[in-house]
Figure (cartoon, rainbow, N blue to C red):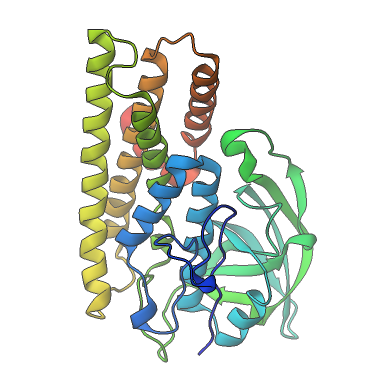
Length: 329
């Protein structure tokens, strides 16, 4: 059975070295006994993002990419893609256009926004336009993609989530992964539907908010207005986290019982709505804390400025757009 090594972010203990660590940054399975749960993935991303939002975001992308590839890709492709110290990230947005050449190869054109980990990646799994209802992703070497719009700076900008472009790039059809049906020779695992790539995305703003809550404390400014803001942010984050966790726990149960199948359209819409709701509740909490905290401490002010920028950067992400549309009417 093909396997994928764990990729461990700087500053995180490496479980392969025998160190105690509940937070390896990428999990993959060789069978159902190695398939970590969606709930554990959420906890992982929250924990990492509370300390470093950029690392939390990259953890979420790398972990999600690894899980759906291990569910749908061939063993040979997994072994080759994750050979040596390769790091693999992905963009699920189905924008790539594949044009078969008729000889087992194809050409791909596309422009993917928010290609997280672009400066670390050896390969990127890039979403393609469905054909006859079949969802696909193409494994592309990073050096074949050019930066269309650069992305760099502090905080979340350190994910180097450039806009990447492919112009008539050659791709072998064995590097195109069909995300529609789980191959019959392997367990379904936790990624029975490609949409589950997004399952741990709310963990990033939740971790950012929880890190701020831990840093600031309910008495940082000593005013009743601050205490109210803090209490409201804390309560909203708890409720959002519990809502997402409960849903993911139910999906974990289905996966363990071999009953997690591709989502019907109504379930996909409900899944996305719950995720995006929690995502934006946490971002609202971050921005409320930043706006209400009145401090003269320069180090704390700098942390708040970065947190505000991170919150504003995450807010318009396309994968979480459904909740925004719902709020705007």
